[in-house]
Image (tube, rainbow, N blue to C red; front, side):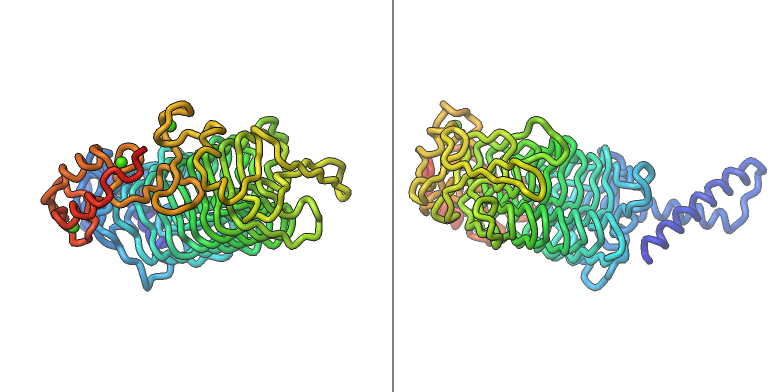
Length: 494
Ligand SMILES: [Ca+2]
Ligand SMILES: [Ca+2]
Ligand SMILES: [Ca+2]
């Protein structure tokens, strides 16, 4: 109802603007018009500051101001604090409900500035494009925003942060809570047509009675990018169900990202990372568990094209997930990498002990309903099954061209490292697991010391205060934090 009121208000405002112009021409200003024009000025300045420009975004500090974003979706906004929406149930997205592809949608920017929208509940099981934001299109940008303890329910294209994305950029955003929908459902976004997701994550529980369901995104395609991102929430659906992404279509790119959780699909094409992919995947991993009926894979349920794509690939990825299929099909059930492969695989590994199969993937031939699945086992250079001990050994990966820390032969981006202090499979550079390793290369060294020194003596609220350095959490960077830091000095450095 709130948004209906808002739309009505916009219409009213447009009518009155027209009225004002008309009366200005006649030199007449009725009191009612003057009052409403004053109200219009009040809406603009109803924010806590700013003028909506990129340099001076409108400042939002409460629920009413948050809802007023709908009055101008091309303006720029910044949160001054977290906002708790608990107790309000919205019948459509709080911001930017979808009206039409070209007339609605966020085209401005929304900067959470490290704050969160808490307890957003949108209950619209008969409607599409549901999330905190309904629709974001080209030029739209959301960054540094948490969506905590959300409860989103819609039909198609449902996400915790946003329902439908048609281009746009999402950086440093995360969601927690639960997301439900009838298809194209993701913890962060439901449907992505060409948008970029950078350093985003979701722990939301994602549930659907249908297909294209993912912990981060339900559907991802058309030049869209996911990088340095992850999901850990439980994911459940029927077909095309994946830990990170349900379906990654043509030209969808996923890199430097992972899933760690439980994926369950009652149907076909269930994967630890993606349900089905005909895009580009590199430097990713899946851990946890993957269970499905048929076409179940540690990384992808299907690595094959439904649109006739000629080139798609998966490079330097691994799975040490538990993989299980209920299908009695002896080959297309559980596979280490992907149940069905039609693309290019390079330097991918799976843990044969956790997966309990030595089939890397199958090649499908024949025609429905008499498909023949030919299993492929170790295929050096492409896919290799390893023991758990080998999966926890650095040289398994560096020998195959993976760009690790403390080596330059495979590159200097240092995307991977072995976990510190525990025996486990490799981790990505976005996962810093040593207290005190908050910057620079992996491990605790002088770069990290410099970051600590810059924040030294500062408390929360001080300019330059760096929360990441507050190892002993008392909102002040001091000797307590330094004591822990020094315990880990040079840890992880080879
Ligand atoms: Ca390297
Ligand atoms: Ca470091
Ligand atoms: Ca401290």
